[in-house]
Image (cartoon, rainbow, N blue to C red):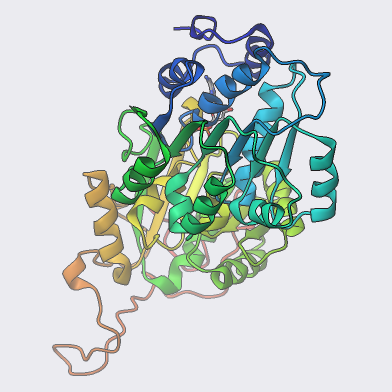
Length: 432
Ligand code: AMP
C-alpha cells in the first residue's frame, strides 16, 4: 500500500515525500480511507505508530475539498484537542508540516502562551485549531472563539485526557460544537472509560486497533537493574558516562524529584534539564529544545510533561522511578525505538518498587530481563521480599533498612563526566 493509493491529494503527497515517508504505517493504512469517507473513528494507537499523520492527513485533505481560500470570514472547521501543551504543539507542528503546500491556516491554543495574541490570531480567522481543553474553554467563555462551524473533532490521547481529569472540560467543549460533525477518538489504551466516552461522542464508529496495543515496540531493548534506591543516582551517572550516551530521557515520579535529580546529575558532570508541570511554558519549551538539539545530555521528566513527546530516534529511556500506573511504562518507553529506529529502555528498580514491576510485567505478559551483575550487591525484586519500612529483622530483631552496600567499599564521588566515563571509584564495573 502506498500513500498515493490511500487517495490523498497531491500537495499532501508532496509534503509526505518531503518528510521521507515511503510507506504508510498500519494505523495510517487503516484510518486514512475511513476518515476520508467522513466516518467516525475509534482508534487504539499509541504514540510512535504514526497516529498523528493518520488523522492529520485526511483531515487536511477534507478541509481542502471545495474550499475557497479567498472566502471570508474564515471559520474554524477542524478542532484537535490534546491533553498537554507539548503534545498540542507537536500536533500543531504536524499540521504545519503536512499542510505546507495547502492554503489552510492553523492556530495553536494552549495555556502558558499570550491569550491576547491568540485572540488576535483567532479574529484574523483560521481553519484548524489545535488546543488543550483548559485554554480552549477560556476562549469559549470569553467568546473569543467561535466553534459553531466545526465539522471535524479529534480527541488525541483521550486516555490521558481522562487521566488528567479533563472529562468535564471535554464535555463542555462538545457542548460548544455543532451536533453534526465527524468525530475521531484516538487513545493509546481502550479502557471502559474510553468506551463510555466513545459511546457518547461517536456515531457508528469504525474501530481501528493497531496490533499489540498494550505491547511495547519490538525494537526496544528492555532491561531491569535491581538496585537499592540510594545507589540509583550513582548507577545512572555511571551508565550515562561509561557508555557515552548523548541523549537520555529519564523518568521520575515527582516534580521535586526531577529538579533534585537534575542538580545531582550536574554534580556528576552530566548536563541535564528538568521538564515538569511546575515550569513555565517558556522554560518547558527551552528544556525540550536544549534536549532535542543536543545542548544537554539528559532530560529528567515527569510522566505528564513527557507525554507524547516526539523526539527523533531517541536512543535511551531510563525509568529512574517506575511509574505508578503500568500503562505509563508503555508510554514512557514508546519515546524510544520510534518509527523503526532501535532503542533501549532501562529501569532502575529498588525492592519497594517490586509490586510496580510485577504490574508492568503482567500488562506486558512477559518478564523484562534482569541485568545479572549490576556492580552492586544483588537485591530481590520479588514482591513478597519487599522491605516493610523499619520492620525489625527476623533474625536479629534489629531494624533492617535492607540497604545493601556497593560490592566494594566506595571512596569519593563517581566521575562519569559524560565523556567515556570511568566506573565510580571503588565500585565494580557492572557486567554487561
Ligand atoms: P506519532 O505516532 O504520530 O507520534 O508518530 C511517530 C513518528 O513517526 C513521528 O516522528 C512521525 O514523523 C513518524 N512517521 C509518521 N508516519 C510515518 C511513515 N509513514 N513513515 C515513517 N515515519 C513516519
